[in-house]
Image 1: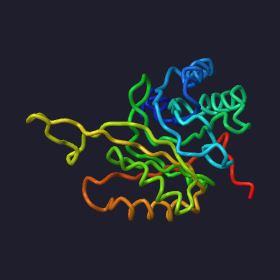
Image 2 (image 1 turned 135 degrees about the vertical axis):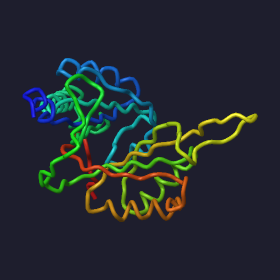
Image 3 (image 1 turned 90 degrees about the vertical axis):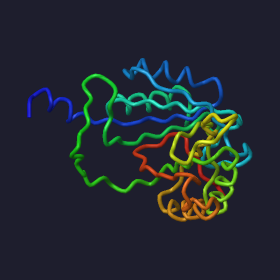
Length: 228
């Protein structure tokens, strides 16, 4: 393997997800750039949590922005710490953030697909993120089932589907139906129970009813648990 290939495959990348009140997302991106991250993406979402409850995703504004940034691990760590500090994530209602390791990352210079991804024996983390993709209108069903199983709210993001089961007809034309992505953060010990509850409530074992995936979280900022 050449020196150039070694330089490519030995770089570790992480994703930083930041959930803030509406209008703050662009400021998060600007600060990320100052920390060496070349850019990111802002999604408009809707919070599902009540302000009177002091637990996860404790954001008062119903409209939220989800900011996603990808960079080398060192830059992500620096940006996450700086964003948490500057936007006061240690205080309630200011926002949350989490980071997760990526197996592979393509699309920018000096990045290539590493077919042999090494299992580094990653320690089991305290939190996991659950992502659920369903047809528009079903997100509330997902959230209700998750909350009944012990989750504490989440964020709903509007999206569009393009899978094999996703097309409908309008005046003889194929259209892509609206989708909703529900993102939740919870303790690892609750993940299986919550996922099973969502599957049962949405009949996700049937083709075309949705997708669930989970990721382990490396670090979290701004999460609050119940005090009672």
